[in-house]
Image (cartoon, rainbow, N blue to C red; front, side, top):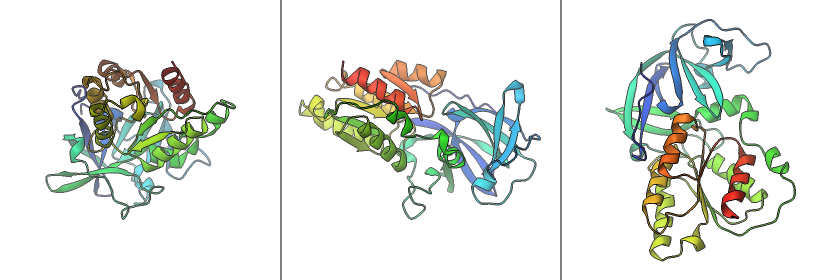
Length: 298
């Protein structure tokens, strides 16, 4: 199956691969996928997390295999099926699934954000739900799945502590991130780094409405001095937000940092073409602060 479908820049669309685990349908953004291969034997790692099946080396690259059935509390997966080999947050990880259904091209505006009744901010591992011909497909939060298995792969305050004592700044910074937990962690990290005036948005549409209103009043610099945006977000994604900002005369010069788990060569080219000033892979929070310093204090 071709997992390298290219989308035009800033169209607010994504490709979702639908797969099956425990008889249920789930989804993953195709941009995270390197390849899909048949299940193969792995080497068990002693004292590893229960959801880690082991490691294997296709093409001389060490890859950790994660049993999604175990992660989703659906029991232990059978020694068959497929590995969806992914690359995000600079990690190469294979997720063991039963089967693959196909790829769907959808708009971020059609993705439903799970409500608090489904799971708490801390426990939820779904970033959205899409309706495919009457069937609900749950898009999983693979970054959180990995961070729950190994917290060291997530955002930590140690990187901020390493920056030392810093001066305070009241210049307004906008954070656009749909994950409530990550939004909170990024905000707290940036505040600890000295930037006290933080505006948080849960998607690109919410951010754009604020920026558009500020532009109409001629008060963009008073409202927002820099934007930090994720790529994957329901309603409006980060790439489309960057496109709108650059196309609007009032916001065109606003510094933008893309902070996403999806930063690879292809995504970096897209971000550059759209006009992002900097692009960083999560969870590089220390480097994010350095980029903020370079752009907001210039």
